[in-house]
Length: 174
Image (cartoon, rainbow, N blue to C red; front, side):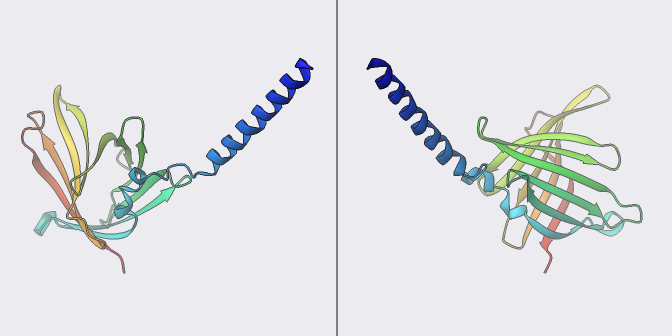
């Protein structure tokens, strides 16, 4: 009798756990609100930057991929020899941060971490050139439905001050 009761109990527990696991699997991955902090960037964009000889234009197509868990960027300048780059951004709940990896047709590789606060997305990294360490960051700001600004900045004093190196204005394609 004890064997029958124990077997029945284990069977019912297994059924209950399977039902709980099935319900948990029905919740889409990466659906929490933090995974949507980069949604402003999704879409097709016309870009412009600089003035005079430093002026330039380009395009950027940004999509949500891999079941909605990855933001993929496809950047291209409109130069005679285009500068082309790709980035992949993911949010990690365990750290509460965004992580981005950038690669380009000049052999560049950059890795960033950061987050969304006060209406701005800021991603930064520590870099080193010629034995000198410095910080780099990109800041997405002035965010509206159809436009925003993006700054590429550098700091030689551990983030006390920032030098603007490149500013791009994004305008959503019609």
